[in-house]
Length: 514
Image (cartoon, rainbow, N blue to C red; front, side, top):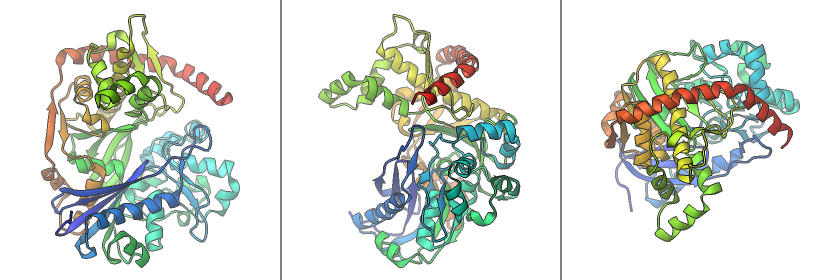
């Protein structure tokens, strides 16, 4: 297949793969190519990646799609970038990595995050920076590096994210966008600049961080060898773009106040638009920048589709075998079982904190809990309870956001869970709101492409992206089911509050007995 005409390539550097997605100038997906890479776990609770492996994946993803579809350099109008948030690594004077990339899922800095909250007035830092105090935050990670690897910290010339490093390799300069910077805990929302008080606390200066630029910043003059390998011209406009979560809102068409995007993939998130930087008095939500007048308020969960995968892998050998014989996806079979159980799983409630939790609790010590277990409960009850537990987590985040920004009038859903009509209906019932399913599987890449066109002046406003997106389904809530879930959600919240001390105790036990 050969693609004709001008195209825009959205490059999405994700947690498990980098995707290069080719779009028409009207936002239609024409082609894509993905390159996978592993997460490294040197110790329990650590999560790292090889930065050079991720850089190679960017080159291979773009080069792969341009070669496969015979896209000529002159056809590529622009590249727009998206990247996962909260990554950080140390770079030496020569631009070489001193560490692996420490990613969002890394929990090594639990103690530092707890001290920030208790001893360093962490809630004030959150209100200035919009990033909740948690081990995911580069602020807590840098504290850990300073305390546990002082030689590395002292010898570092720069501290950068994965996208910063990729662009440095391509252009030889360190730049970062306001969106990714606002997810570090080092960036002051009110000034769109690095927070000098936080930097002073860490013992670093602005010179240790990349230069700040807006998401619409255009880079040109790429290293010729890399341009050739990617099949693009060295002077192709590369728009720095933003973080994947922020761009996903644009990519599903949730672009106005009162419109929300809910994504459940490996993890999950709820995000909505605000016209000004907005934080939560209780510190439950994040606030990240996009462009002037576009601020994303939301909250991420650690535990999304990964929990259904856990069920499949650890307890679903029978389902995997049956699904193989029937030519089915094992997930579809698990879901079929769950459909035979009434809402509420006949009193089996699941707190889905197998990976700790981020929003709204920001508690790395939280642990998964089944409550209400009786002899009549079978495997299908557990499956439904897990699916409902993920949705309870999403509901808790949505309610926290509502307290900050007001009601959500339109909700658009995406991610792996959106492939399951049954799971989507559970979420609609639990929220008591209609859900819209956009026809897009590459929301962050589409958002990156849209920002690229907007930066070039070829898209009058980001709000126009909504006109590109068709919807494939709509779910209306079942009022009877909503009442059942309202009763159980109250129990879910009470259980979490009553178990907080016990979570701390079991987490400490687990750390001592690894």
